[in-house]
Amino acid sequence: MHSVSESVKQLLSGGGKDIPLFKVFMPESVMEPLRQVLFSGYIGEGPRVEEFEHQLTGWFGNSNVLALNNGTAAIQLALRLANVGYGDEVISTAMTCAATNEPILAMGGRIVWADIDPWTGNIDPKDVARKIGPKTKAIMCVHWGGYPCELDALNAIAAKHGIKLIEDACHAFGSTYHDKPIGSHSDFCCFSFQAIKEMTTVDGGALTCRATEDCQRGRLLRWYGIDRHAQRTDLRCEADITEYGYKFHMNDVTAVIGLEQLKYVGQTISRHRANAARYDETFKDLPTIKPLRYQKDRSSAHWLYTLRVKNRPEFMAYMSKAGITASQVHARNDTHTMFGEFHRPLPGVDEFTAEQVSIPVGWWLTPENVAYIIETVVKYDRR
Ligand SMILES: Cc1ncc(COP(=O)(O)O)c(C=O)c1O
Image 1 (tube, rainbow, N blue to C red):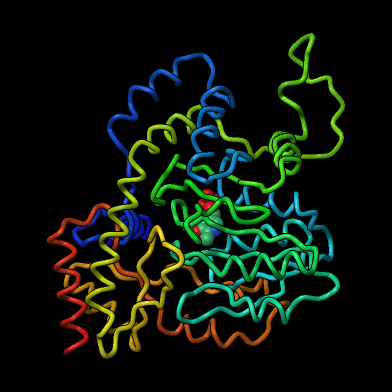
Image 2 (cartoon, protein in one colour; image 1 turned 180 degrees about the vertical axis):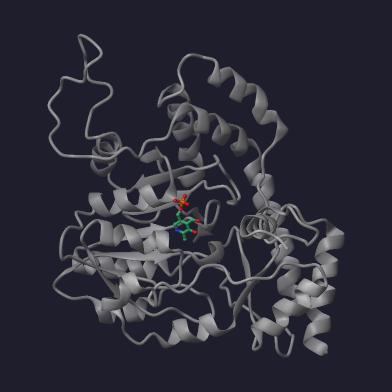
């Protein structure tokens, strides 16, 4: 009998015999730069973080980048920069990690759920438009599995009402929308470099801002509101702190891991995409198992490959018997007790939740693994 932590480890990092749903990518080449920074005498936020941010600007097509200690911090900082405060409403999606929505509560905000498109998992702009009210301060969207939301429509709604659009792009590093990278489209865009993401710093995150002033303010707020570059006569930070901040900054140790990961992540994402393309091709005509429906004007980095199946427990058991991990990723948020007061009908979330299941798609799959997964899914479909 496995302990809980062993079974979770097996599910998340390929510690077991099954083909895993996720796996930590960590190149051996990280060891030397890591050793250097660890013994350099400076391991806090410093030149390596600056270098990491500089390199990220290319990936995001945006020079307003803040490296942070995780994706949840990026979301909370974005909400703060959007001036979401006590009693303000944020329209958000329930089909995501709790980390998307808990920061709204942390800011004293109220959540108004908008429904999703049950064939993408992404927030439905038409429902967002219906949910706008006098207290709405921001819209939060999540690119499910890496597939970008309807950003033109969401940005148009935000602009019309003078509110902010925040993208939770924690699944979507390397995705593009209308040929431009995710990170360059909206007021704020939040990324996670948590352990099992395509690009990891063990834990880490980043925030991109459309406005340079927001980025400058965010740079202060990520470290207690203190300007790290202000002139000092001794070690104290003497300059006046004008508004409270957080301890959300990245450090040079995690930045060094990130810098090393950036050398590989393009290749990693290409492998996710190539595997997904093989699945798309084979699964598009299956009678009972349905892939999600994607448009060609955007490209997912495919952190996930999600299918819809009528009888998920049976499908998962079938895949498990074949040695392939298949699982739901994220529980719908609206049914959690902490969000109880925001409850409302969400038929798209109901439909998606009833059938969604993700199968392995990542860089760790060999061509034989991919062929075997396809064969197993097709066999299940025809059984
Ligand atoms: C959609 C989504 N949002 C936010 C987060 C939080 O990111 P982090 O774990 O880096 O805080 C995650 C984490 O996996 C996520 O999947």
